Image (cartoon, rainbow, N blue to C red; front, side, top):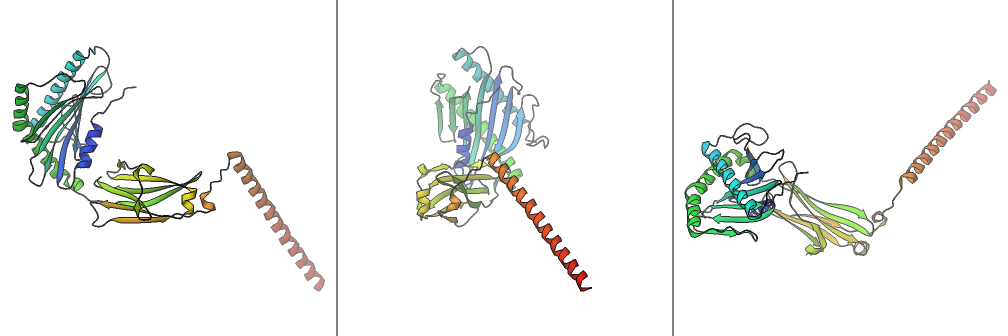
Length: 347
């Protein structure tokens, strides 16, 4: 089985989650594959914030809309930039294979590159981060006034002063202006999606388990993904170490969900604490709170019925029902006979 190791996915979601109101980003998530696979040699997914807006690969050689909506008209410059990324990643993987003596098999070079634009007048940020065979290689960040380059732990191909100056001019004069223009084009087309505010639906879910209950605070169907979800016990925050979950996940419908679960044992249920799920989100002016009060009763005890026992119980209920129907029918016939005999005697 062939598996793509996406080293940039954690970084991508970190960038998306750190973006707040007034900040938008355009990211190209690129894969270059050396070796025989059923996948294109080079492919790129284009993301506006956290929404996929385009796709490019070396076989179709053009930018298409997500979901098969036809070609995206960004001009020939955009295709040229993606081809340049293709060439750069191909050279980079060749260096990696030579450095680590990788001669056979499938090898992967990945890159996350893009820019962020802030509406408060701060300079735009452009960056890239490379990975080889699932391991960090190097990264670059540049925002017209600040330029940093970092190499991975096992990456020994360093940049000299001349190469750093070259890339600084390249990003300043070509890549950063182009990325910002492309971001603005996509933003105008998809503004209705990336600027929407969808209010979360929040509720408690309780599940009986041996020894107590699982209490889950669930917030679902919200956008954007930035949300604060806190579980309180009698007005005090529950320690995060007691909770499981908490990761914001896609819902599959363009919206998001997050849940936090607490194991409440029988002793704690007896104390009848009051639990509150409090949520703050960009779609709401005030916090949304939902409460649940623990109750210890027979309903918190689990009775497990095996399949044979359940079948036997069903058969017994069926026999009982048939017996009752026969008895009821027999009683009705007896009453009818007595009534007929009484009428005959009167005649």
